[in-house]
Picture 1 (cartoon, rainbow, N blue to C red):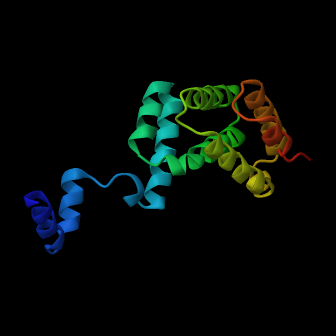
Picture 2 (picture 1 turned 45 degrees about the vertical axis):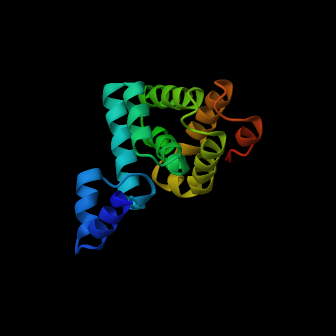
Amino acid sequence: RAALDRATVLLSVTKGRKRIDNVWGAGGGQQSVKHLVKEIDMLLKEYLLSGDVLEAERCLQELEVPHFHHELVYEAVVMVLESTGEKTFKMILDLLKSLWRSSVITMDQMKRGYERVYCEIPDINLDVPHSYSVLERFVEECFQAGIISKPLRDLCPSR
């Protein structure tokens, strides 16, 4: 009871919530979408530089937003579409494979991420002319690796 009373006092103090966030941090669902997108983007860029799958997995789990993992899938696939070499293609494939096998990313989140890419591909193709063919190849590789299901593979738009 004493702890609850103390917490109530701390939360009611002017700027109390901000101070508590600084002390304990604001994790999970309390973070803004904009902040989470930025964190995921940084996570992916750092992974592409280091190649450390376990570190990327740890960072993703530390965000404490399993309901938002579709954003990582979306951003990762878009990075593949925008890249020019095979290195990014293979590294992102390895990352998604690892996150899938360790069950960090669920089937639902994987599906939502891919469906978002499928919806956005006409716009992406305006900036990246060969994105349809790269997407088809990446989706096929993901299917072969067991990351995505056959129905999700079959939804992949083609030109």
